[in-house]
Length: 239
Image 1 (cartoon, rainbow, N blue to C red):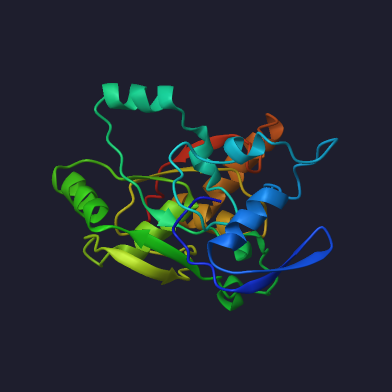
Image 2: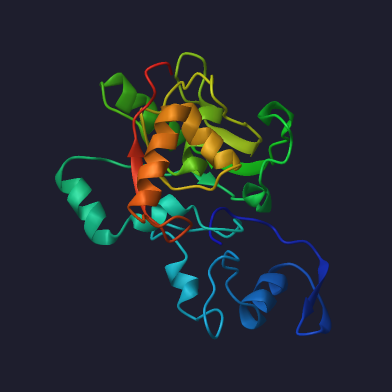
C-alpha cells in the first residue's frame, strides 16, 4: 500500500512455491509482478482479487509504498469532492502513517490498560505542521480524516496544541480520558467491537454516545469495514 517511502533490504521471498533471492528494488518488482493486492480477509469474492483492486483499494492521494492496508476513511474522497471542498474554502494537508498489521489485532487483555499497542511509522512534515498551526491560530478547525491521521497528529501535538514536525514510530493508544490537544472533528468508518479503533472513537466522542450511534448504524444496516460508510464525529464535551 502507498503510505511512505521504505528501503527494502535483501531477503528471501517465496512466490508460487519457488524460492527467489532478491534485494533492493527487485523485491518490490517481484511482488508487483507475481503478487496480488492484499485485501482484508472479510472481502470475499468469487474469483478472488481483481486487477482493479490495486487502484480501488487506495486513497486518491496515496503516494508512497509502506502500509499494509488502506486508511479507509480516505477512500470516501474523490476529485469531485475535493473540488467541492475547494469551492467552500476548505483546505487540506497530508500526513503519512504506515498502517501496520497490528491494527487488525483485537484487544484480548482483561483491561484496555494491559493491551500493548502496535507501533507504526509516521511522517508529519514541517509544511504540514505549519499549515495546521496556522489554521488553529486563525480560528479554523482541524478535521482528522481517519484514525491514522488522528493518531499521528496527536502524537506530534504538544500540550498547548502546537504541532511539531514528526518522523518516527508512534505507539500512542488513545483511550477514554485522553485529552485531545489539536483535533476538533473526526471523520472515520465504523469499527469492530473489542478493537483499539472503537476505543479511540469512544475516547473522542464518549462511550455511551458511540454505543448509541453504532446501535443506530446496525439497525439501519450501515456498512462496516473498509468499503463501508463513515461518520463525522464531534468531541465529547468532557474532552
